[in-house]
Image (tube, one colour):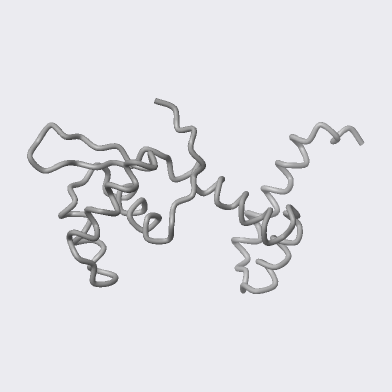
Length: 133
């Protein structure tokens, strides 16, 4: 089944997705125990959130065993791309340059990170259809 609904996980849903991406298919109990490492969350709250996420097609559910097992139905990469695109559009009016300038201005960048950025820029320039000059 193709996910046609917009990808709009809440902050708490993203926390649950992070757990599922890191650990793979998990029971409600396991997800709840992982959530409780960061902040106290009731079991029924975790269960309800997973049920809502299932309705939103963010997770899939295996109902074969007594304990339902949930797994992420969206990849970490596609979620990051979607959320970053939405953030870029709403916060920086679609300007990747403004986003990068803000990020670099507000964060101490290591020499290794700068080298990685240079390599990425070089790759983007080499792959650009306008790289004829």
